[in-house]
Length: 325
Ligand SMILES: NC(=O)c1ccc[n+]([C@@H]2O[C@H](COP(=O)([O-])OP(=O)(O)OC[C@H]3O[C@@H](n4cnc5c(N)ncnc54)[C@H](O)[C@@H]3O)[C@@H](O)[C@H]2O)c1
Image 1 (cartoon, rainbow, N blue to C red):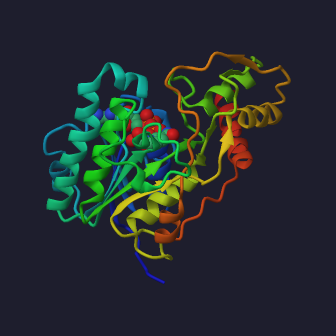
Image 2: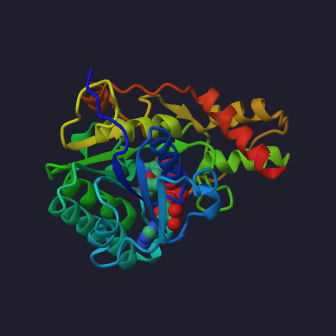
């Protein structure tokens, strides 16, 4: 058993976002210090409500694209050695209309952070990659090696994430985690681009009909946010048990496929929404099936997703309900 100790200095970019806020909360609860960065492009101050006054937390409202950002922060906070880089333009449709900006934030800024982290002798930079890096590859389950030069990316978002993951994974301090569909409390239901789970929960609770694009047999790999946070902790080597993860790129999903129809029925069941489903025309460009092979990360990190879809949905539902009171 290794003993990583407490009081490690961590930088979390995208800390006001859905996943970043959960990660910061966990790192603080483990006794580490967290410097959070966000410019509220798609995040919210209220996501940080539970830890914003924690004595081991400092927040900077700034963009990751700022020149010399990590050097500047390291000059103010001693002993920073882990960078969890989650800040990004996360909306695929937005990236279609803003290609240059997406490349600047999701790729260029990542490269700069990586170079700075290496120069400053950080132990690790863990990057938030995405299943979008696979384009519409239908060889399922998706292996990490399937995303390569020949992959036809469907958006500037996918393209930039792929380039950034590749750069991170080839650096000795870098681990890129390719996340599939993450869900859980604090996922933004207000965003027009929010994931299917937050949209369905919102509609179901408002006693509205759930609309499915296509026949509902399209499938996704949904992974609960606490399992994602555990993956981050292990990728950084901040866990007391389990091996150190070699640098590289790893899928993070559940390895289980859920159809949109199953998802809708489970949400109807949990919310008591008895209205019939509404089916409308498939959206052009939608990926039919997505499923992760999680063998590489499970093997390297001894990580297993623990939260079932039903349990995760129940937790998310509690949060949505509490939020709407
Ligand atoms: N949620 C998912 O299903 C999913 C799946 C795959 C990958 N990811 C990746 O995980 C990461 C976190 O996603 P999320 O779902 O928490 O999204 P989110 O929008 O809630 O979080 C992203 C955060 O980054 C911040 N940000 C954006 N541009 C910034 C900039 N220039 N400078 C500083 N901060 C900036 C936003 O304000 C936001 O708080 C992202 O990199 C995303 O691409 C998420």
